[in-house]
Length: 439
Image 1 (cartoon, rainbow, N blue to C red):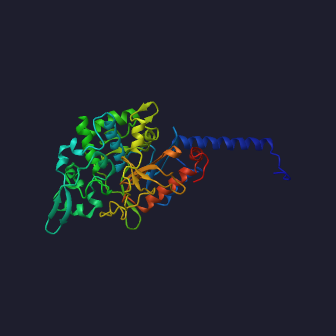
Image 2 (cartoon, helix red, strand yellow):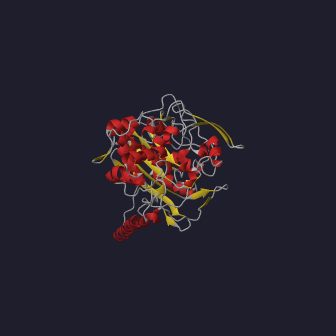
Image 3 (cartoon, rainbow, N blue to C red):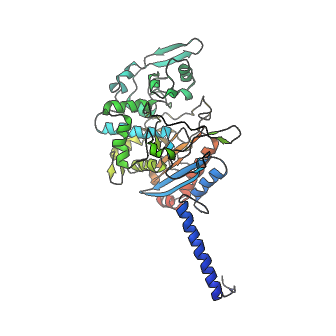
């Protein structure tokens, strides 16, 4: 500053300063080499969110990535992949993404629609004859086991299965279906063998929105129409073209050490990590929730959607198909507040960040912008182990944030997602994509 006097530095002092600077640079290079995911002393607001998430014990570990237009603009990891073994989280950690499988299954269905092998407004029974027997469960008396069932006024269509307006529900989110499954009238989804697909529906298709097993039904439809297992279909038509090399139903043995341990929130706010269970071959390829993946792989899938069906030079959907997939498909219906009847699995009432109120073909939509966050018309969904993503076409931005804790809707996890979202749009890259507008 003008008016200040500076003291000259002697030659020996210059050499000392140079030595200190060289040592500092060498130390910085060593830290980057040894800890490539470290965000120590970073001023990036997303890094700060991830650090604070772990430091404040909101989550044991977290990985997040962001892309704007055609470029990955952020990747970061914080905390532990395994707290018992003291293994640090890394960018390439593999997560159970659960219901984030649903958009991938929906893309598979829409590929078959493009090929003329499936029609959106045909009854699902056209492709899965067993669906012709589906009935509506009107009443169930848990005491006597008596159930009142009737045929639906119209059969569920492929479009209704894609939009969760088919009448199928989840037993842990619906008390009537929970009681029905508990009675043994239909196998529980927890058996993991697909027997739960024999469940009745709870309302006439098209009359309301309720989250459920529709996408598992669609997974079976993909297998039936394509003649391939869902694992094989995904690999050939989605994962290989997009370079999703770390996404699986069955994690290969040589990659199982990268799978993140699952932690459970306790009543006192602490976490406990249950003993790890050995990996078993999958008995049922769940289109509704069976995949493992990494942040990098899932961001490729998001970028494909953001790119109108194309990633780099690989196209897996036509742009018109993506336009159909990403618009409101449920008319005046809205997404109601979801309730949980298994609180250790999902906190009641269930809150998903992002102000989601409509549904497209495999994605939820927020019709109004989120303050400090995503634009109106963005697409999103989540997985039960607190994994989240959104795709913001107006601002050419997509993001994924992965944690691995129960219950879903945990206050700490939701706080991390909401702070992450605000940090994404506070970063320079997102501001450029938004044309410099503040939201």
